[in-house]
Amino acid sequence: MTSLTPLEVQRLAYIRFLFEEGIEYSRRPAPLSATAVLLLHDAVELFLGLAADHHSTDPDPRITFMAYWAELKNSDAAIHLPGQGSMRTLNDVRVALKHHGSRPDGQTVERSAADALRFFTTATPIVFGVDFDRIDMADLVTQEAVALLLHDAQAWADRGDHTHAMAGLSLAMDALLNYYAQSDSSYGWQETPFSFGPAVTWRPAAHPSSSTTEGQVAILSAIATETRTALQIICLGIDFPSFARFQTLAPRVHGFFDHSSRYSYLPSEPATAQQYSWARHFVVESALRASRADEALVFMHGQEAQTNRMQQTYQERAWTGSPKD
Image (cartoon, rainbow, N blue to C red; front, side, top):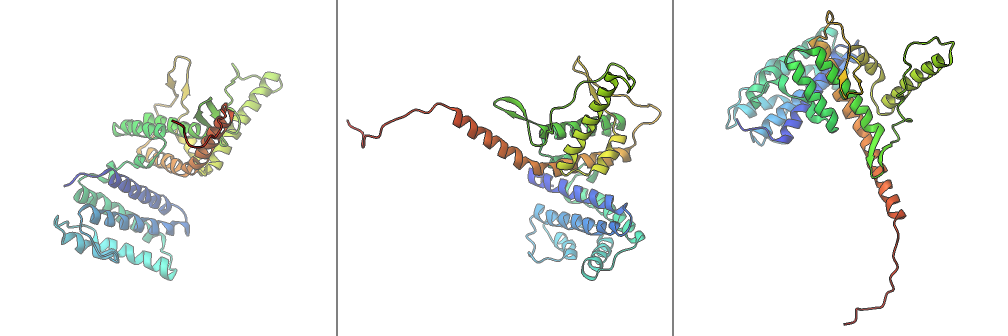
């Protein structure tokens, strides 16, 4: 089995992302749940195309969905893909929906999701020599600090400590918002269009009454903090209701003067693998959505460079024709 190239790893990560999106849609109420069939089919079709490229079968550009099984079987690697019958059913459901407007019922959507999971679980080791659940969607994340925290969180999840892994996801979301709220420039850290003012760091020492001045300032501080975060989430294109759910699942990690980061949790209510899986997918999706703002940061840096050039001292020279010996 040839090793995967970096591009193939990214393509596999995107396939895993589409699959997770399809699973998420399959849990939504009708008619939204029907979208799962389209996403799952796209994920499988991209997988089949990548399998053909990986094994250099050079298929006809007009190859049909179901023809990939024979294409890979006749390749030099003689790949026997599983799930041909269930994927034919998925293709039929997709054709009925996309080309004939026939929406699948709830049981059909659930079966499609289960069939897709079974296909990826069994086919990925056969085709690429890796387990499907080891494909890391963090390979799609371009914000380095966020990607690093996602990998760190996964390391804890692999040990079964999903509570600690969720703390890593909380830090990853913080890193994502900070990435777009501040920009490293020649003047040091400066605000961006996604900052919405400086972060409010003042906190009251206790919980004073709202009738006191200190209590009123504390209330205003809390409102400003929550409003700033909400504006960042919305303007970066991140789904706010999902962010609200994420906040209820992931512990809030606080930094302290000794440079440590700590959080509180209930040992009797540890995070579950399902909660972690959903939260990690949400952070990855948020990072991909937020990356649309990268263009604005690049433009801002260009404007800064132009300002720096304008502030430099220009020198004057006289044109004298061709140089004299």
